[in-house]
Image (cartoon, rainbow, N blue to C red; front, side, top):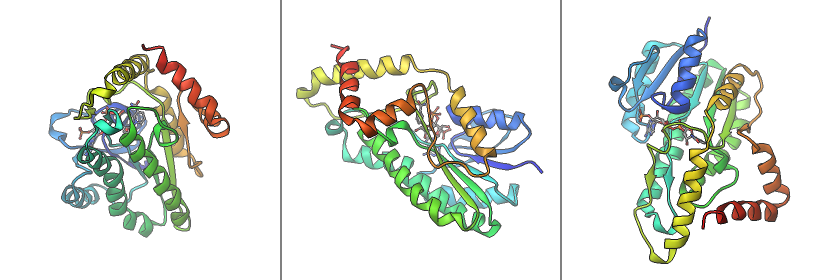
Length: 265
Ligand SMILES: NC(=O)c1ccc[n+]([C@@H]2O[C@H](COP(=O)([O-])OP(=O)(O)OC[C@H]3O[C@@H](n4cnc5c(N)ncnc54)[C@H](OP(=O)(O)O)[C@@H]3O)[C@@H](O)[C@H]2O)c1
């Protein structure tokens, strides 16, 4: 029997690509979007806003009308709030957490009783390299992804005895809809004008030159089939090197990042 795989945020970017690929490979894919009627895809698409508890309730009962067993949940839905920390309102920061952190946790919680009853399953969450280290201009985004890392590290132990596997994927920057769909800090503090300008040019250059998302899709395909996936799975050019430098030589990591930022005068 083909695996039933649920992918949140399957209307764009990584979610759409992995959903299409799995569908082509014969898996039974269920994707989600806040506006499913706007999208024409070959797999089943259901309505879900992970930042809305009522939507999660309605979605969960709808989901089990279509499947009786859930093999894999891919927590992919999320968005990027960019901007300098002090220029970002607390309200914007809370909204970032409502989706990226609490939304992911609410949905996972709604599905856990089904996974436990089955005594099997897999939960793969799309975190970010900014959940393992962080860059300027991404304080709340990185914080929400750090929070996911901490939460799922703990959950992995607790679900092990139910044969439910828990893993993260931590991509570097890849070309998706993430920038088009991003939100920007609402505040402006004149003191930051020069720095903000430099950081925005650095970030634009980084995203303009980011690669196509194939390595992330390949990692997700591997994790879906892996019987015992490792917890942390960073993806992207130089990800492992960057992570070990920041771990073992933080000053070197910081200086390299500063040098790259300072190229943008
Ligand atoms: N691209 C990168 O460089 C990168 C790097 C590291 C991590 N990530 C992570 O990868 C994941 C996917 O992002 P992407 O890069 O593929 O961006 P994307 O193209 O903007 O896709 C984001 C998806 O999330 C969904 N979404 C957003 N808010 C939602 C909500 N409240 N409830 C339900 N669905 C919601 C969107 O669906 P609808 O708008 O249709 O609802 C969309 O399908 C995110 O968690 C992101 O943080 C991306």
